[in-house]
Image 1 (cartoon, one colour):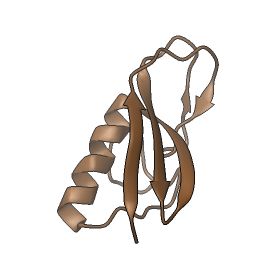
Image 2 (image 1 turned 90 degrees about the horizontal axis):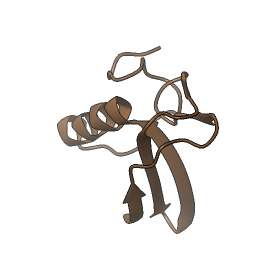
Image 3 (image 1 turned 90 degrees about the vertical axis):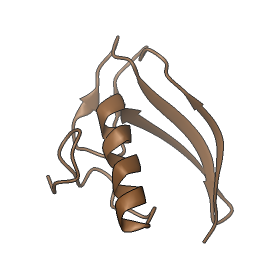
Image 4 (image 1 turned 60 degrees about the vertical axis):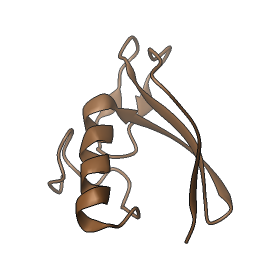
Length: 81
């Protein structure tokens, strides 16, 4: 499996978006992480709460695994929702 980060920005949301990590929405006006990447040749476009991105990065390092179930964790943690 191959992962390639194409871009990562920290915009302010112009509308409501789903967070890929947790079941909570990213609200209009909220600063968040917007990531474009390729995973196994497929283009991905994800948005994360800033604290969810930190939790995900921590999880990826700890478990050496970058696959995850979208919307499965509590906001800003590695705990199941």
